Image 1 (cartoon, rainbow, N blue to C red):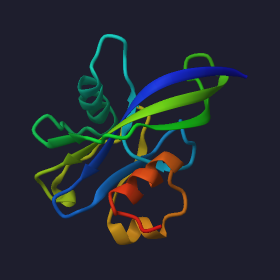
Image 2 (tube, rainbow, N blue to C red):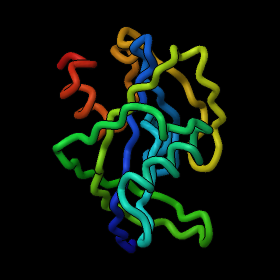
Image 3 (cartoon, rainbow, N blue to C red):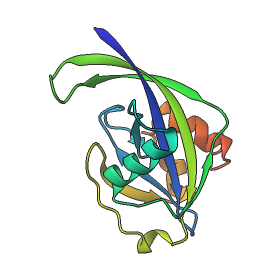
Image 4 (cartoon, one colour):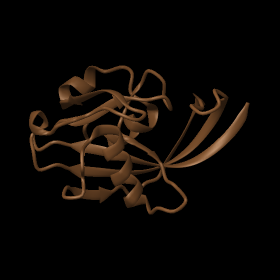
Length: 149
């Protein structure tokens, strides 16, 4: 199996009422993840974050409070490439950001497109009951104090 290395931006989007947005994606099949995706050669991490968030959720985060996390996480997962159907191992380096929205969750229009599906806002209590969250996402949620170990 061929291995691909990718730099990835991740958007931990928090609503004003403390909920966080998750969806399901092909990179971690069947697991809840935050919106995000690969950084293209011609863009900065922030440009990629804004583009990927808009593409995957329909949310424009340009006016939100965006804070990068200092720690870089790593992960890997098998994925089927859309254009060729080839199964590959993807080794990822995650550059994650906290996005603080000015609106409560039910006032933010979401439109799942591109790679994400089943977009859902989760409260802290709901997240604690989920068993299918990607490992890199769990690490960040622990660091934020959003999940207890």
